[in-house]
Amino acid sequence: MDAEQESRYNPFGMDETCRNCERVCDVRERVVHGYGDVGADFVFVGEAPSEAAERTGVPFTGDAVGERFQDILGQVGLNNSLPDSEEPELENAYLAYLTRCRHPERPPSDEEVATCEPFLNADLRMINPEVIVPVGERALAEIGEEYTTTPVADLDVVTHHAERIRGRGFELMPMVHPGAMTDEQKDEFVTAFLDLLGTDYRQTKGRRGR
Image (cartoon, rainbow, N blue to C red; front, side, top):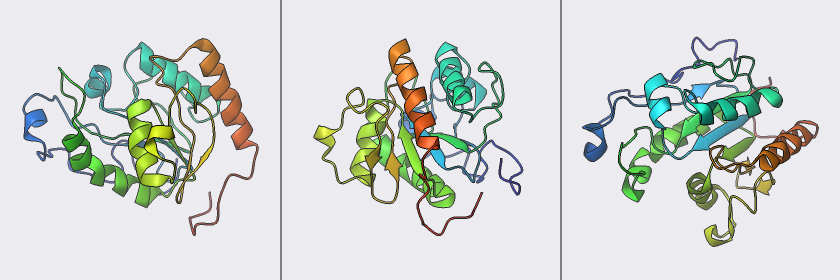
C-alpha cells in the first residue's frame, strides 16, 4: 500500500452520504466507494455493489463470488490476505464500481451510471493507473466507450476476456464477471495477467514511481 496512505477504504474521502440518485438513496444501505492502494498500477471496475459488498462496504467481497475474485488477485500477487477477508490487504490494486449504490431490485440505470461517473473519473485521475480491468459486460461497455477508440459494439467481455486492449491513456484487460467465469476462464486470466506483469507494461505518464 502507498506509504502515505492511511486507509484502504475510501482513501480519497468521497461523499458517503451522496444523494444524487434519489430513487436509489432511499433503498440503499450504504455508499460503496473505492478500496485499495492509491498508488496502484491496476484498477478493477465492476458494475455496482453486490448485496455482500454493500454489507461489507468493500467492493468484490463478502460472498462466494467475492472470494473467487479475491483468490484471483491473490494468485497474481495483488492480495496478501485470504480470499474470504472482508478487508483484503491489497497491494498495487484498487477496486471500484461504475455506481456506488445498490438498488435491491434492479441493475443501475444509464442515468445513474452517468450521475456516478465523476466518482470513478476522480479515482482514475488521482490514481493514474497503467491498466484498467473492466469486470463484466457493463463495465467493459462503459469504460470502453470512454477510454478506447474501439466501437462499443465490437467489445465483448467473453471474446476479449484476459486480452490487452490499447486505450486512450490506459490499457484495458477485460475480465468476465467472476460469478459467470468458468474455471478455464479463471486460469486464462491468471496466466495472462502474470504474463502482463512480466512485461514492461508501465507507460511514461508522469506518474509517481513505486
